[in-house]
Image (cartoon, rainbow, N blue to C red):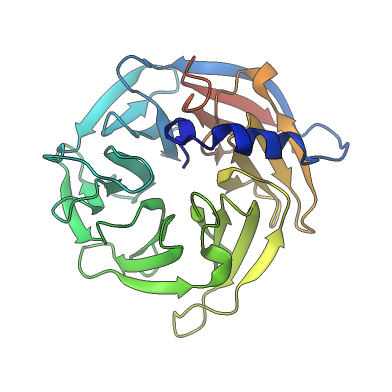
Length: 313
């Protein structure tokens, strides 16, 4: 997450990004990129995170509109719910209310993270099909809950906090959230630390926005966090990501208008750019041979959209 239009240090960040080599040449794994849906910047419809259903419909969080929306395979957008506005938002780093990660259960229940800087609203929220959003767990108001993943096997949710640099865990039916992982590799260095989040092959995977890293934390037989491993480096402003289905290969969104293919050995290659329509991409989802990339236009202020491309397997 990184609506860094709110930071005065943007120029410094951009200069650093320009100095970092990002990719080595490789066979293009994506083809036929196109914009499947455009969203309203005037209405603050800036997509932060994405999850999919079995039919290929995309469920998005519109971060600053405080909304959850569904985009059909034909590109139609339907707002499903709007989270309540705080009396006065004081969200760390952002200053305004922010809806972040999203996950979907098999019964259609949607879970999202919500940060307002207020104790009454900050936490994890759920929306059942046809229902209204309600908070199922409180999280620290001085933090920034961001990435979200659901383990359907254990019915637990995992949440990154980009300010505190930790990963929380909580029951999907609601209840107390506890710190599951706390490591220096998750901490921010300037703006935001632990960010994107996925469960994959018996481990929790996360990114660190500031440090440009991909991290893997095994889940032990007791359910606790095992030793953290740094799996990839050199990707400043990395956001959320998705696995392609090829083992530990993943696609990661980066704020500097890139999507990178990250291989199991940690090497990475840029596979989508602004030339394909990216506008500050925030997350990635994969359904079959289709890749979905929401762009929030946080830094470009031009065209928030949803891009789709074909994954060449």
